[in-house]
Amino acid sequence: MLHSALINVMVKAARRAGRSLKRDLGEIENLQVSLKGPANFVSLADKRAEQMLYDDLTKARPGYGFLGEEGGTREGSDKSNIWIVDPLDGTTNFLHGIPQFAISIGLQREGVIVAGVIYNPANDELYIAERGKGAFLNDMRLRVAGRKRLDDCVVACGLPHIGRGDHELSRREMTEMQNRVAGLRRFGAASLDLAFVAAGRLDGYWERNLQPWDIAAGLIMVREAGGIISGIDGHDNAIESGNVVCGNETIQRELVKILKPL
Ligand code: IPD
Ligand code: CA
Ligand code: CA
Image (cartoon, rainbow, N blue to C red; front, side, top):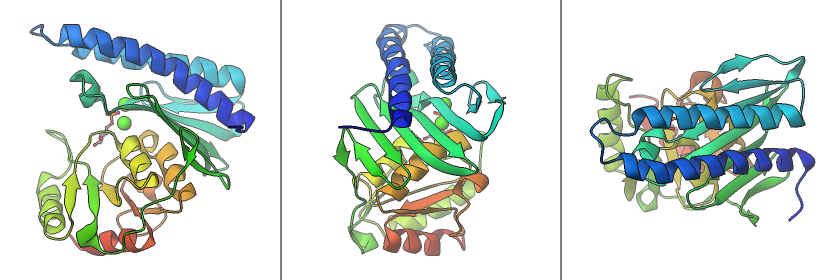
């Protein structure tokens, strides 16, 4: 399938960094048995992947800015374009050899996300989206699920890690949702949760306290698949607030109705 030059650049970078992560995943399986575990190794794998992405993306588009989880902001001469990159989303999964993690690359232009690539090298699933051109999984066009009743829906969420976020609030959310949906899931890689909503695998997803690199690529994926993504308050502020609620129009609205008052 033919994609724009921009998407080709992003896909090439994601695949190269993906090969590196996949090799490292193999190594982790060996380190798992050691007492210290693979934590240090993973943080190196993460940094190595980000450096590769930085090198490839800035070589192909000199001047674009770069915001990466590991290296923070690196300004470019072109102030309108900025890559927003998570080189390894789903670190805890990766660390445990669970094949649910991804490289996430978004491009923000004049403050708007215009392209996204999410790639899971463990199963070779490649999600791409470009503004006005649709969202695709391995070249198959994506569309969000059509279910309208929450009690038919499978919905994913995030859970705050130890020592972070509001655990009490999270438990209230769980209780509310458990009473209303067909199934609740916690997969552990925000970019893939968003991609799964775009693919219609999940009917909805919400999470608080995310970072721009968790959301950027997934946001355009959901939108280009016909879904709605917002902050918990229902407004178009997911990246700014770090809070995400999404699904088809009906399900996103239902989720906001439940979560907003909590
Ligand atoms: C995390 C994952 C996880 C979400 C966390 C994120 P990381 O990203 O996306 O699903 O619940 O809040 O920080 O740390 O694995 O890149
Ligand atoms: Ca992340
Ligand atoms: Ca990360």
